[in-house]
Image (tube, rainbow, N blue to C red):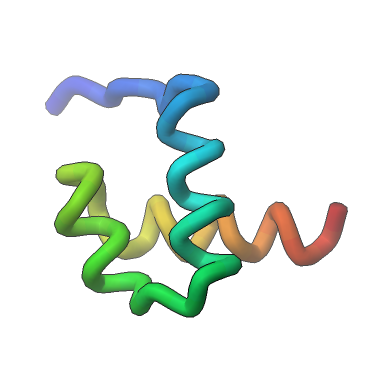
Amino acid sequence: MAYNHLVIKELTWIEQYYKYGEKIANIAKYLSRARQTIYNVINWLKKA
């Protein structure tokens, strides 16, 4: 199984979608990423 790192553009999209109140599942769908990946990024942003 290959792992692809998130690029800056994807991180920016995740942050913006989350700020606008988009659901995690929808963000994951838009970016073709796993929900857990999105959760991890959002939790990291909350701590920062």
